[in-house]
Amino acid sequence: MNPYVTGQTIQMLREKRGLTQKQLAELLFVSDKTISKWETGNASPGTRQGMALLLLQSAWLVSYAPAAISKQQSAVK
Image 1 (tube, rainbow, N blue to C red):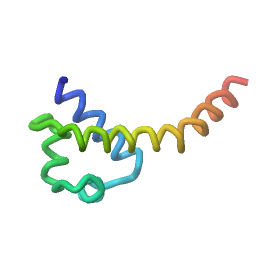
Image 2 (cartoon, rainbow, N blue to C red):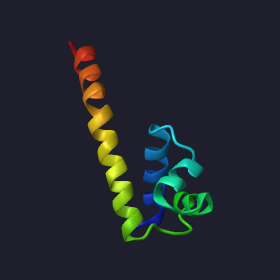
Image 3 (cartoon, rainbow, N blue to C red):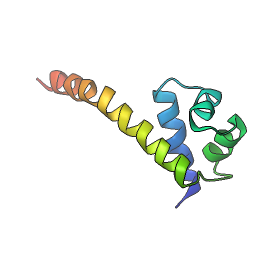
């Protein structure tokens, strides 16, 4: 796994959810310094944290993707 890409993804998802590093850290039971390390590619999440991040991504997709798709379809018409 490429930590740099993972870090970019984590940061993008966190920002799209409107979370600070500290808030995400609290959700995942890690420190905000750990989130910073993940986002900069200096460390990678473990299996448990990776699964939690996947759930956050899934929740974001379910919550926001339909509205984004609808908006795009309206713009095309």
